[in-house]
Length: 251
Image 1 (cartoon, one colour):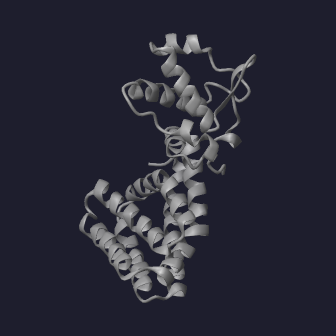
Image 2 (cartoon, helix red, strand yellow):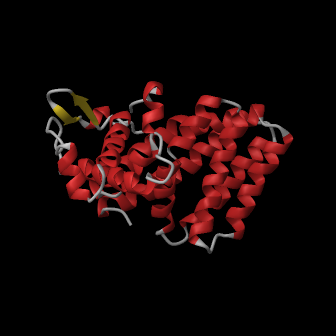
Image 3 (spheres, helix red, strand yellow):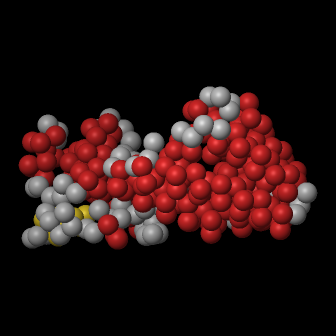
């Protein structure tokens, strides 16, 4: 997974202002096309003028979209060679927009969700343990608040997913580890896709509520070992659920 290039941060940010909508439309279209394989690695994108004609847009909007794609590791621009598509290994997979493009296509979506499952297994038990060690009283209350929202909205798919994401976000905040918090924020878009898949299996969200409560109680008890084990159990359940769905192509 490619870490963000801080030097490209300015160019990789979402465009704001009057031309933002058109530029972002072009950006999303080109990013999705590259992910889909319409423009293969090593090939040239159409020229700036050709893209402007294709999208019925000004060259400035096209230029800005290509600049953002460059910051996200999708293309590089050379004076004489034009704009060249880069291999997937160069893509910034911690960029939420890139993850969004991946999730539009089943092959990439299933692999991304599977890889997220493995990454969560590496990170989240330690996040839970750190939260049990470092959380303030207020942060513990916020974790329980998120859990209670999960209970309250268990029958409302959209709100239940948001509450679930909030639970994991608040645990990361309670870990007091800034790098882990950043990583968790980066792949929230994948968490949402993960939870949407699990919600497709009747009864699994309710079953996993119990495991979330055990995690919250271990954090409240200031027991890092119990918090780590409880999160491990929760993630084992999640991995089992995902393994049932992905061979069938997802939800």
